[in-house]
Each structure stands twice: as structure tokens, then as C-alpha cells.
Length: 404
Image 1 (cartoon, one colour):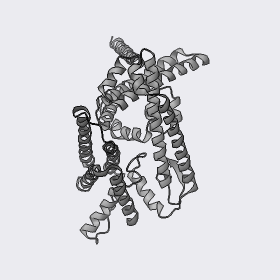
Image 2 (image 1 turned 120 degrees about the vertical axis):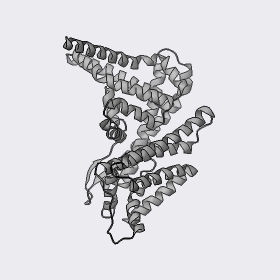
Image 3 (image 1 turned 180 degrees about the horizontal axis):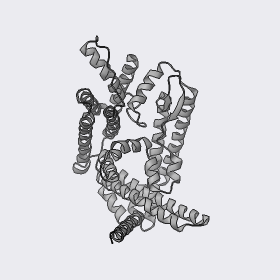
Image 4 (image 1 turned 90 degrees about the vertical axis):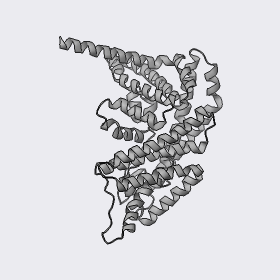
């Protein structure tokens, strides 16, 4: 196994240096400091220490970006933006591993007692270091657990590359190419920034939706390309050591994302592995207000830009109001034609609310927020806000009646 670990680790070093240059040092500091914490902290406290260090380090890097963008008014270096993305993925892997250690799902392998101290530490550190820096997972892809990674390493020595994974990888790659082609067509016909400055009234709604569509196509094509590389490497398949495929990690469930008429379903489906990670890391561990805590942490993890803070808090409000909003529509739609009309209207509304959130998060500047606030686009999330207030008022009145 040592050869495979070293091969993946060296490949990760080379890829990091080639992709982000000198900024790779920021990634290496994150990985090796987290490694030191994992191998020195108590099992009950390892997650807290690793989480605090990693989020502090990542936040400092994000603040440095904001300082350059907003105070110095400098153009962001593309390599530094990629570095921040790598650090965010690193945070996922580190916290996933430390949670597994804390919950007893992962026990770092301890060699025989006759091995010397240096060799013993090397055998313990190499799998973790490779998991954090291996080249198939360094720049993107769904979150892969440490146990899945270990299984892949063990089985890769005994199984050949399956036709199933090859065909799935080719399908994902072709899908990514098609989506990239559609994205370039959209970019050629629509200049979002110019339209944003020139639009008025309902024309701004068209600009909002088309601009958000461009960002969604970008996400979909990137996810499918990442999944293609995962499948090509064998990481996307749940393998037993006989080479049997049991399941595939999927981040891009495009059909559900584009056809759902509820914000809650869209939220659970968008970037599935990250949604599951946030649920495990924050939602299930929060003692009070887990929904607000999850979206607040997501804004922190993404960098705390003004648009991101507003966008994720707005998203939390939309999810909170979504259940009551659709409960009301289900109560008034009795016949099949009425249900079809209600589903169509709620689908359109969901698409426009999602577009509003995506533009706030992706454009992330105050100028874009002002444009969103004072355009007709604010009507769509405002409907959810009003419905949430009405639901809260109804609950208060019911509580008063129960007390009487």
C-alpha cells in the first residue's frame, strides 16, 4: 500500500504546484498542521481543535481576498481563487475525518509494537496525508470519506478497471462537454452585466433568470466533470474487493434541481455531498436553531462576502417558509387541473427565488445587492417572507387560544 500512498501524495504535490504556484504553500500549511492536530490531540477533542484551526486559517485567507478586492481595489489572481476553493474542499475532508475519529468510525491503523517510533509515525501519518492531498480529490469532486478512500486504495491493487466505471465516466464527461457548449452559447447571446445596468421593470426579471442560468450551467458542467474524473479513478464507486459496484456518488442531480417546485427539495439536492456534510457537521450537532446555524456556517465557509451573507440568510428564510407556503397551496388545490396550475406557478416562483439567491451569492458585491433590492426581482422572495410572517402570526394566535 505504501507505493500507492506515495504515488497519490506526490501527484497531489505536483498538481498543487502546477495549478496554484506559490499559493500551494497555504494548502500545505493547512494539511500538515491539521495532520499534526489529528495525531496529537485527544480523540474527544480532535474534531474541535482541527475545526477551529482549519476554519481560522481559511477565514484569514478569505479576508485577505476581501482586503485586496474591496480596500486595495485589485483584480483577484485566478490562482488565489483556486487556492480558496482547494482550502474549502480541504476543510470538508479534515472535518469529515475528525468527525469519523470522534464518533469511532475511523481508527488510525497502529503498526506492530516492534516498529520504531519514526516508522510508526510514518505509517500513521501517510494515509491521512494522502487522503488530504491526493491528486484525484485535490481540486474538486464530491466529498469522499476516509473509509471509502481507504477501501479504494486496498481494492485498487486487486481489481482491474471495470467497464461499468469507464462507461459511466465517459457519459459524465460527454454531459459536461454538452453543458459547457450550452453555457458558451448562453454567454455569446447574453451580456449579463450590461443588461443589469440597462434593464428596468420586468426586464430585470429576465436578466436575473438568464444570469442565474449561466451560473447553474457552470456548476452542472463542473460537477459532471469532477464526477467523471472520480469514476475514472474508481473513487465514485462503492467497491467491494471483488470489484462489484454498489453505488455512485452524485452531486449533479440536474433533473431534480430543474423540475422541483419546492425550495426545500432544491436545497437538499444542490451539491449533494456538501449538503450532507453540512447536515452532519452543523445541522445535526446544533442544539438550537439548526437551520439558521447551518446557513450561517455556510456563509462563513464561503467567505463572508456581503452578497454571500445576505444570500445564505435569505436562503434560510426561504426554506423556513417553504413548508407552510406549499401546505397552503395543497389545501386550496382540490382537483387535478388546480394541482397542475399550482405546481406550475410554484415551479416558476421557485426558479426565480433560486435565481435571486444565486446572483446574490455569486456576484457577492454591495452594488449587486442594491440592484436586487430595488428591482422587481425582490417581489419573489418577499412573497416567502410575507408567508413566513403570516405563519408566525397564526402560530401565536393558536398558542394564545390554547392558553385560554
